[in-house]
Image 1 (cartoon, rainbow, N blue to C red):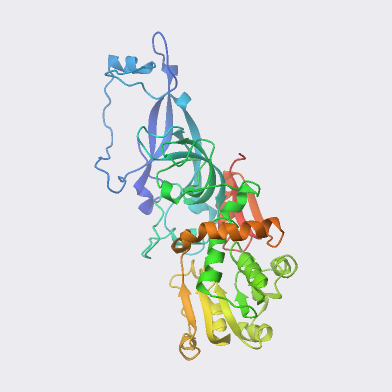
Image 2 (image 1 turned 60 degrees about the vertical axis):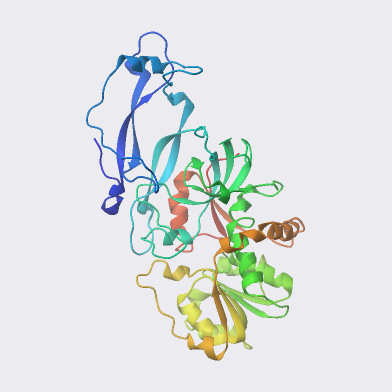
Length: 426
């Protein structure tokens, strides 16, 4: 019997009872050589598949099945059943269904399935053990029906996916071998079969914390590097403002700007975060936007001569106030707008005419457009880390069970620094 998971459009996945073969047997088979387990299955074929999805009505019990309950070696008309002894249980964080407003922990749930820790024969995929998961604001966009080019919606009833640090357990790809450490897109689960191996980066430098590859040396670090140096084209002495400045990206942009010789101010949502910006990351100044009732006046106070570069992470009222305070020929790198991700419809921007008469360049960007710079990025940033010129703050939640709360916390500002989930130690 099958029952829906998640309701609504979550009917794409259902609970699926299965009879599992425990292990190879000798002698007469016993009921205990099998077990009944429940997992989930998506009632939709993978894109491009020529298969069919069926609901089983009757099963045939045949004597030859006993032959397949033993290990069959070499060429044979029969292949062995795969015993549960060759698969492992796999905890997963499942996306329940599309929703409006702020994410809640109940929009996700944990389940346990099974996975065979061996890639299919002839496949170029890899099997990985996930060590760290990255919680990123962009994941909220994928929790609704996406119409934005470049993003795909999560499938209700399936595991969330995002950036992760993982260890390769088995590989059918010539560039990866068992034992390799990698970072890239993976599932929110203990183990993942990754077929899009072109998106995986092999970790060569292990003399820094592995968790850094979810942030400082991963996607957020590359975002800060590309957004600041490539999009903003900064010059020494310029005035730089960063919103959500204590987050995974903002804390790095500020430090890059200071090393270049810029004047840097950041905004954040608590006294603790403001103190971090000024005392740990070396910003010239910082303020708590929640305590500023007039953002325009606040920016005039911190930037009496105007802003040359704005690194945009929040949108909304902050962007409107910034536009009023930009200098002629200023640059705005639009990295994200976290204040708008949970609003439907999003807030409009009132001061866009400033782009015209101040000749401001306002450019949106996505980090994957700059992947070709990753080696250059590492060559730049790794020495900074080792010399203590860059510091990085992480907020690490332990255990896959903590992942839903960690992700939800991003949108209420609970995290201090880069939000990471520790799934397993190497």
